[in-house]
Length: 203
Image (tube, rainbow, N blue to C red; front, side, top):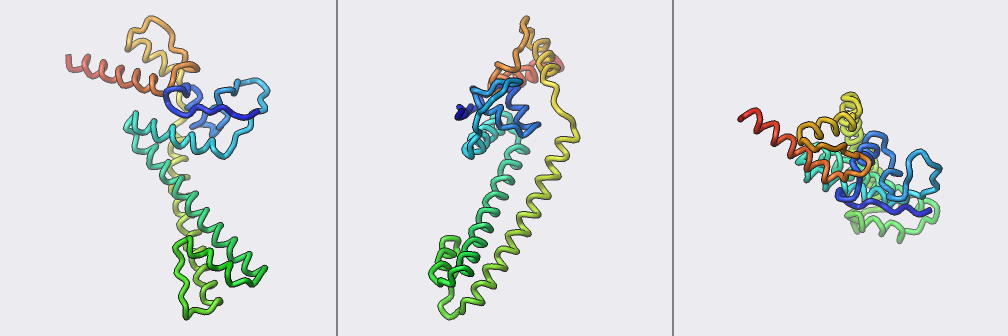
């Protein structure tokens, strides 16, 4: 079954959002995913793009620069890995075919092919670029892992408890259903609750 994705914070339930963040389970991004039931939903590569858009929207809604920074770090890692893999692929194809025209593909990656340079020197430069990319990837992954580990060490969120606090602060007189409340609505309630708390302190 093809996944039908949530594509914005206005439709994605806050429960699903936290499941995605804390468990890295993209099944919760699918509208047709039913928890605790057998699902044959296929999660495609486009799921990550939809998630990135949602995370970017969420970071703007909450003014949470940490999430946006992590998102940019992930994108940076993927771009570096993509470039490294392309260069490696070009070198492998050249070694198999010994076709000099194959190396022209390096131009699309901003590689300068010098007229006076022999093939061996060009390959050495390409390999050096791969090593440099590997170093950048390693550094960025270390940064991301440290941030992710710090977040995990803080413990998972207790949505039910947070919902109860919101119900009390906002005097809703009803229970908040975290499985149906959208991310954007949840953020608005959290902001309103914070404003009320500030007013009570000042008043």
